[in-house]
Image (cartoon, rainbow, N blue to C red; front, side):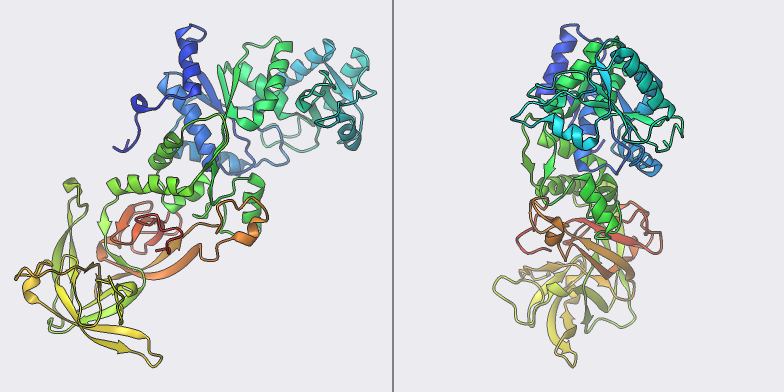
Amino acid sequence: MNSTEITAAEKPANFIRNIVIDDLQSGKHDLIVTRFPPEPNGYLHIGHAKSICLNFGLARDFQGRCHLRFDDTNPAKEEVEYEESIRDSVKWLGFDWGEHMYYASDYFERLFQYALDLIRAGKAYVDSLSAEEMRAYRGTLTEPGKESPYRTRAVEENLDLFQRMKDGDFPDGAHVLRAKIDMNSPNLNMRDPVIYRIKRVEHHRTGAVWCIYPMYDYAHCISDAIEGITHSVCTLEFEDHRPLYDWVLDQLDVPCHPRQIEFARLNLSYTVMSKRKLLELVQEKLVDGWDDPRMPTLVGLRRRGYTPESIRNFCETIGVGKSDSWIDMSLLEESVREDLNVRAPRAMAVLRPLKVVIEGYPEGETEEFEAANHPNDPTMGVRKVPFCREVYIERDDFMEEPVKGFFRLAPGQEVRLRYAYLVRCTEVIKDDQGEVVEVRCSYDPASRGGSAPDGRKVKGTIHWVSARHAVEAEVRVYDRLFTTSNPGNGDYRTVLNPNSKETLTAYLEPSLAQAEKESRFQFERLGYFYADLVDSRPGAPVFNRTATLRDSWGKGQQ
């Protein structure tokens, strides 16, 4: 693991870790078993990463195990594509479930038999109310519900109807199976919740065998019990569902009764993490797919250039709490900066080029300068950077009428070309529209390596690439997708950032020409960049900007 990563011994205590420690010390459990139970109906996002790190991290830290279990109980919205992406993302984050990958569909027959047990015990019944009637009977937060007229059906009738539901004798919506609990409960989840519905949709794993499917609240707790889960860790929105979780398990002869524990979900500024809204962004082509580097999906963050270590460290940094709060995007961005600052080799690139001609330097001559690949890590070695009479600099590094405090290139002003020479602007060339297209400079031959032999002070140092040797490449400069910190509060489409993606033709030093996919670099003075997972290839690199060198949001983006 990267040297910046938080180790298990350094992790701060939180209330879930304390519960696990107490359970182990008291002898309640000898082995900790957790699970990550995604629905295969979308791509995982940064919020899921918090749950993944928590569940797999608990199992790792306490020498237990964590299961990956797909909650595939709604085939109408599930796809194999999502399932494969989920597996890849969990592995990319650095976690492995080993042999413990399961599916709720593995338990369909057992779930059906448990439902029969509830019916035989008088704890479940087949209801024939329409969906609209059921909503009306349910009541409100301030008014109790009303019992269905079908609630008193005899056990034998319920068993017969439920079997016929399974056999496909009824159309979708004709009947549901409900748990018989308490229509007067102040908790709406306990007002005879639906636990099975008819849904004639072929399942990607079980085919057309089933036309009834269990509801999440029913299937999830039993799946936990079947797998021997000790701590069923979930987000706060399931807190009101915990009484139902416990009720179902209390009625049945299941192998164990896991403890459900809720924690605060991750709310990250400048993002939306609703699966529905993320799907809309993709379907309406407001982004370039699930793996668009502006998306908060794990595949998007990966393609942006985020490292698994930076995401794990971010999840450790924000901690685990009991109340919802907002985390600023800058904290995630700083996490990847800290990681890449250690691991990313340096290189020079010019994103918005301006040609500089160095008069007095011999035409046709080339020399090489030695540059460290990392200023603080000699083990990364050095590289040779070619130099010739014409170079490219960043357009922002020249100002014809410099403002106070501008120490870069300007008429009559001297700067240091990093690793190379001191140069002074002597002439500015403009086109017919008055646009600066070329700058001419003199140079000090005695300043080779960038040091003035007479000890004179030169405040400005700028990067460059040799015009003759530069590699032309596509560089994508990404920024935050939204202009407001809470885009989900209203129509998020109205606050899309029109400048969230800019595609540039840049010039790179030749050492970057053969960059492998997923390699990372700090382009000096510009930020951290990543060779695109999909489009980049050796000889024709495509780079995505992962992060600026510092937080520039609201201060004039770099």
